[in-house]
Length: 538
Image (cartoon, rainbow, N blue to C red; front, side):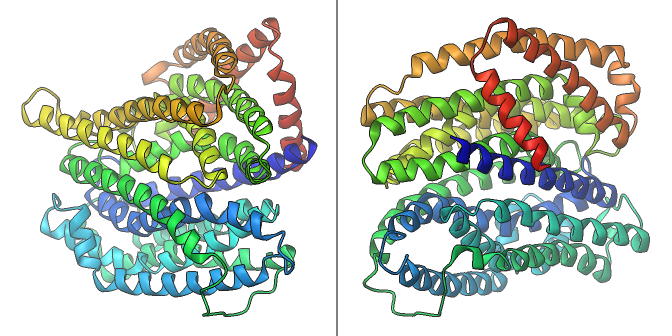
């Protein structure tokens, strides 16, 4: 457990710094192009999301699900897995180059696919941004390939810390953009070719540097990689079969996201739309990234080792323990962000009115935060056993629910039942509902595979955490009201929004920890030790 704790501390500390600098990056970007009612902001959001979508397919769809368990397995080979990894990197590089070139060739089609509800001038701007953003695909993929290999070899830190350099480069570039071209450029007509190149080029440069920095840590793996185009004979066919299911799974998720983007694009210029949803998701993912990834990633490596060795009892123990520890932090994060939604959203908007509109979207996302954390553990347990087929089916079920709820939201707007400005919030709520249903189905399927997972104890523990979160959330909401509420200073500016969020979150945390101490929650000591390690690493 001590090695897991140290690994979690390294990842957690790096993730905290990465997310803080990422927040600063988004704050500067919002200052440059706006967030709510920004047609230019939505155009950039669509273009810059294209390489991210393909990165999600490469990283989540193939590397995380398939490569980590396979590298752990081949590490026992006489050559330490060198031949396997050399062939893997050669194949990966070829695929990345071809994918990037193809995406560049069909850039107008890709933009049209995601933004067919944009006006012609807005569509043209998004396409111009896309040509500068799409080269990110290769460098995202390289970063993921190297990073997941480092994780599989228990070198956890660099993968988490490398994005910090990306954020620093982007912040500097966006600040210079504001100096040269001005701020709050929300109208499409304000954008010149030079401005387009500077903004989107800066975003791509950050990804290039991020991948380059990660390569500096490769020597820690102890593996020498050489180009090897002989891809037969080391199990790549087996990986292809495994990756086929994960590819289909993530592809289904991307198609569901495509439907969401198409529908929400209708609200561009009239309220919270594509860019506002991305920023709300960024806030939503902050606790997920810091808590779930820092604690869950080392557990995933351990789960893979236990699964390969056939130690099912230890796997079941890991599942319950990790969900309970994750739950302790995630329940608090849900309560704190819920009551601080407006000041937190103010950080990523240019007015208090826009903050209120974005906060509604954030609240709808938060409904799914706890289920998403549980799903992380359940889904990766299937991966640890080399089962990518089952996750495909319960993810496909989730995607169907996402699409149906998004279509329902669109129909409600078309029928005059739901105001257009609440369209993004309704789509976000559908996403959360889908996550709740997905984790129920996934947990049931895992129970069928491994037997009793100790979920009764886990649910009772999560219930105890929720009980502690009720008074904590009440105190946080009271703090927000005492600070002036919607018309107070915490919503007056980005900086005061950040300060207000921290004050509200701090009040929630104090009450939450106090109540758990009164309830004598055993997980509190484990969490305290982990937090202490994070502070030392930070």
